[in-house]
Image (tube, rainbow, N blue to C red):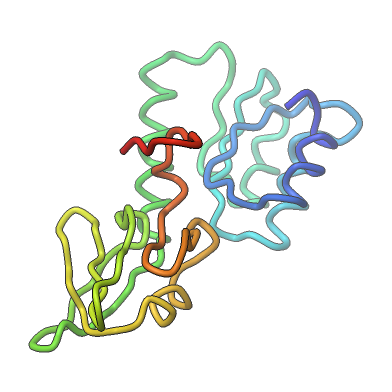
Length: 171
């Protein structure tokens, strides 16, 4: 994004960011002000400051930034911080608790690729496949905005879609 203002415009339309790398100098709105604005409505987004200004480190704590990296940044340090951010994102992820009949199962929503229905049974395709007696409509209500109902018998996690064509599907 060319500026904090441009980011806020995109964020207002689609709030599906998990990790942000912010600089301090970003135009009319600086990175700390942007982070404070985002924190008011999203306390789980992982914020990492990547900047040449050490004067703002204490303000990074005010917005619960995961880390404050000073430029130039070593690749190993950046990857270490990004892996920590990914771990925190996964821990904040919503989990489905569902009954299979004889047991309760827990499925992290991010693992679900798609779900389809046959008769009165829904099969959830994740790391493993789970077949449950429930309606697709009931499952749809438990899922979030990443999921799209593509017809009467299937719901897909749009984060797993790589390409859409008129005549073929690719997994």
